Length: 86
Image (cartoon, rainbow, N blue to C red; front, side):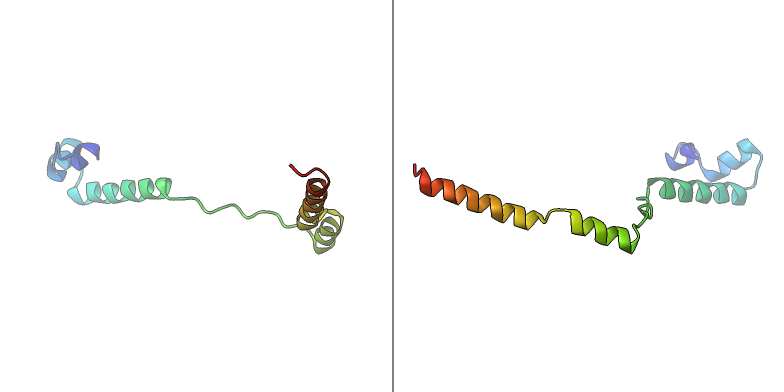
């Protein structure tokens, strides 16, 4: 197929050399092109396993809230800045 795609040979020349019909060679060409397109296409992300509802709620309940932690840290920094002005 590469010699046909790079125009080194025609389909007629290749089919004579391989002793097959030009229609069969064209079919193989189409199959090869489809396979290359599929191989180079982005893959669908694999479906990730989901946690159960109970487990999800338990995790959310026990994980610290990132926004609350940031607010607490900001207040501590502001308090320190008031005590030690630069």
